[in-house]
Length: 172
Picture: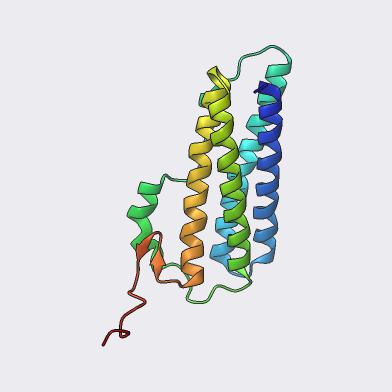
């Protein structure tokens, strides 16, 4: 897969999801929800900046440094460790239709991850390392969105852990 094409496609994905998070921040009434969307949008913006810079470097014959790609989103294990502490900080009733936003964001994060997975398999060298790193980062974003969606949906799960048995009382 041609490096420039891969980076341009990645840039399109990053811009779309960044727009979703920016829109969500201005739509959601809950301060904590706004903060989550603001942080995700900022992280996506840093990826847009990285990709734009990488395209410019590539067009000038420069070398892309995959180590320059960073994220502020913690890994899944760190999120799991903080889950109980965070649980007490989530308002009982988030204002605005955050479930709809989280569902849209989750769909886009999964699509973006799928793109990076496929691109990593079809590229080599630094571009492959960039795609693999983006995949790791997008999987972190997906974990955060699932975490928040599970709570907002009140489906008995909290970050992939059963919070309560939804079948209690059914077999008594």
